[in-house]
Image: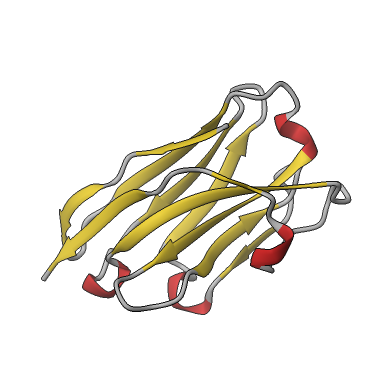
Length: 125
């Protein structure tokens, strides 16, 4: 199971740190991703990280503002969000993809098998 937390209400320009904890024992076997879905829009990939944490991928709109990281000893993946904008407002989800080569990131939603419940992020202008 995946449990996301850390969402909330923040003013534009502020920061939030999302966490996603896994209750499984094999967290390091999963590539991880953070997705978001804004009202009336499709869910989209925000950032992804490889099993070992050495490779990352970001959506263009968040490059330079967001950072994904993971701590396999704590079974947790993080999304540090800085310089938040109103257009970042969405429900954020973490997801896990199994059976991936150690250094690969996964960028397609269909490749993610396990999903956590979302956490709401609201950025006010």
